[in-house]
Structure formats: structure tokens, C-alpha cells
Amino acid sequence: MADWRSWTRAHARGIDTAAGIAVSVGSLALLAHFLLGPRNLDLAYMESIVPTLLAAARVTFFATGISFVVGLLIGFLVGWAKTVRPVAPVAGDRPFGVVVLVVVFALLAIASAIGAAQSLAAAHDLRGDLWFRDRLPFLWAAGLADAAVAGLAVIAPMGLWRLRGWGWFLAVVAILANLVTQIALLLVTGVSALGLAGVAILPSVLLLYLFIATQAFGIRTPLLTRGANRVVRRLAEGYVELMRGTPLFVQIVFMWSIFLFKAPIQSATLSAGLLAGIVAMTLNTGAYQGEIFRGGLQTVHTGQVEAARAIGLTRWQTMRYIVLPQALRLILPPLTNEFVALLKASSLMFFVGVAELTFVSKQLSSREVRIFEVFAVVTGIYLLMTVPLSKVVEWVERRYRIPGLGIQAGREERVPIPAKTLDGFTNLPLYPLGG
Image 1 (tube, helix red, strand yellow):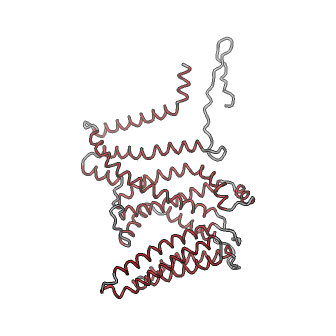
Image 2: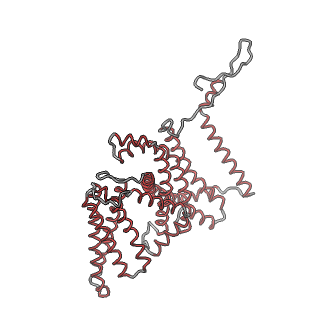
Image 3: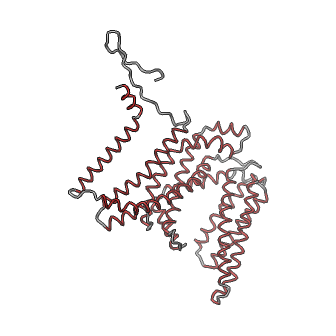
């Protein structure tokens, strides 16, 4: 009897899990019997549609995985930007905003290089066409201008990272050259004043940022002493509020309309709807993960950060060795919840024609009257994707917990041990030591 009780106590978690699965399966069986009536579940049909639904589930998991991974990077940068205090930059000290600048100019170099390659290739292909002969000088000029901007955008981040004045100067020149090129392109092709204003917004913000951050590059500007961190923080807050304040469905449809009408995609493997869904979910989850990272980073006491800076660690070293090891343990559960929520929200891509799990299940249920069977399999597939992930995260959480850091160790229940007196009667219950 004692061995049976000890075995039961040791395997209580597994027994509870098995009991929960049995109750759930039994409840679903009763529900199916109540809804279907005399007709039982068509198990053969359920088995036949599993490969089709699994292929659709791969599309769902692919889109969710890419969006979540890219959103991790965006969320970390946004969360870090929102925790940076707006202090005046010190000459020679590398602010967080410089890291953002380097990333922005790297993206600008890639985009300009792609634009230059497209313009020069088009000019080369159309050089013998009489209809486009008058457009050839414009294509060659646009290609060379984009190539020059790409070269400046490659060299400028080197000086920005080393906090050199020439890097700051080349960055300003690159932004102005890109702005002039884009405005000239729009004027030639024809665009409204609203379109010109929209194109000029991002370069104007970058120029303002560079002029605010001049002290970090050793350029003295007495009127601009508050630093660029304030600008980065406000931009991060605006991005988070925009993404969290609008529905994901609206964001997906908006991005889909852009890719469908303004940038059509001709690809057999990547449709406009799928790309729009990935981009929209990435931007959406990046905002939510930014709030998760912000909460985790702010949980680490500022005294630890000040102590790390006092012993000579840079901001990145402080983040790498002091803040992140503690913050990641705290944000792991909410990040898992965000992934599960994003996985379920990916079904919204159904409305833009993506052949994901919900879209395929809707087609199958409309083709044959087997609605219960189809969605029973879909439910099982979703559970297979989410439940194992949750269990793995629970194990990682228990394995790498830091006592006293918000994730407390599980406490075993105190089981009273009856103590018998000499006359054989039970006395007051005694508890084991340490309980």
C-alpha cells in the first residue's frame, strides 16, 4: 500500500495529464454523438484528409515562424529603445540610436543596390527598342544615382559605428542624395503632392535624428543637447501604438492591397497574400513583443545596470551579460503565449486567399458534408502544434529559473503524517521538517 501511494505521489502530474486527456476525448465523443445522431464519425474520411491538412499546416507554421523570428528582433530593438532614458549623449560614447542608424543604412544600401540593378538591367535590355529610346537616359541616370547612394550607405555606417565625424557627414549626404533621387523619380513618373510628402517623411526623420545626435560624433551643437534617444523612444512608442491600436485583419488586408496593386508579385511559391500576411504579422507581433521585452528589461533593477557601467562595461556588454540573461527568463512564458496567439491569428490570412489550414479546411467542408470531421482534424493539428511547445517551454522555465527573480520554484504540498500515541489513538498531525 505504501509503495502504491509513493508511486502515485511521484507520478501525480502524469496521472493528471492522462485524466485530462481522457475527459477531453470523452467529452468530444459525447458531443459528436449528440451532433451527428445516427451517423457516426467517418474515420476513413478523416484519415484521408490528414495529408492535405498537414500540408496546409506547414504553410501556417512557415508564415508564423518567419513572422515570429523577425518580430523577435524588432521587439527587442523596440523594447530596448523604450527603456533607454533620454540623456544627453557624450562625445565618444556609442548611444543605442547609433546601432539603429547602422541597421537603417544597411537596409538603405540593400534597397538602393536592388534599385540600381533593376534600372541598369532595364536600360541594357531596352537599348535597342525604338519605343523606349527616349527613356534610356533617365534609366541610366536612375541606376547610377541608386548605385552612388548604395555606395554611400555602405561606407557611412563604418564611420557611424566608430563615431567619426566623416561618417556623420557621409550619412547626411547619403540621405539627401536618396531624397533627391526619389523625388526626381516621382516627378518624372507623375505623382501627387501627398505622395511627395510621404516619400520625404522617412529621410526627414533620419536627418533630424542625425542632427540631434551630433554631440555623440564630437560635433558641438549647443542648441541640441538632449540626445537622439528621445527621438528613437518616441518613434518606438508611435510604432507600438499604431500596431496595437489597429486589428491584425485590417493590417493584413492593407498590406495585401499594397502588394496586389502597387507591387505585384509573380512567383509560383510566394503569393501576394502570403507575403502580405507575413509582413503584417511580423509588424504586429514586433509591437507586442516590444512591450514584452520592455517589461522584462525594466524588471532588472537599475542598480545592476549602474554597477555594470561603473566597472567599465559598455551598454551592449551590460545588456549582453547582465540584463538579457535575467530578462529572457522572465519573458519566456509571455513570448510563448504570443507565438501561440500569432499561430491562431494566422488563420486571418484565409481572407486574402492564402492556402493555410483554415482556408483548406473551409474548402474541404464545403466540398463534402463532413464539417465535424474536418474541423475535428483541424483542432487536433492545432493542438499538436501548440501543446508540445508549451510543455517544452515549461521544462525550459523550470530548468533555467533563477530563484527570487519572479519565477518561483514550485512548492510541494505538505502532507500530514498521522502520529499515533502509545494507546493507539491518532494524535495531532505532524508535518515533515522543512515544510
